Image (cartoon, rainbow, N blue to C red; front, side, top):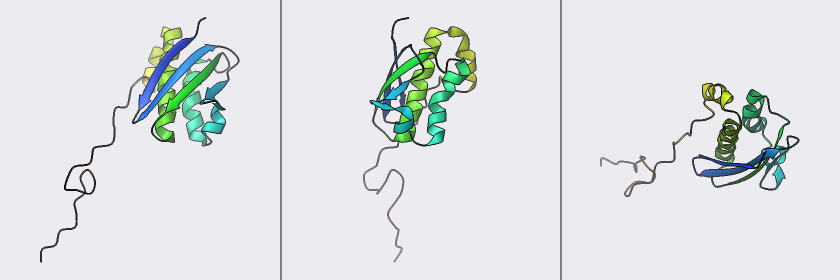
Length: 128
């Protein structure tokens, strides 16, 4: 199998992954994923598409991710891994779709408007 290259996005984060046959090693920006994402729920986010596909120790994954915060980056990596697994095996598409792992969450921060301190917040109103 050749290297499969996909990308995933969430908020301001962009994740590019390279998936190939291997021993199950996941590297994010040159570090092990457990070191890069020390929180357990973020590690679960990244591992879960692989466990649903039954491919936990079959592929080596190299990830380049930038932009946004940790949670957005973890969800961007999850989307990219899910897309790569569907490219390999089309049969797991329904399982990943049920868990909404193939859906790009397009919600982003609303822009700040002029005359206001934030997007919708107003300055304190004084009647007198």
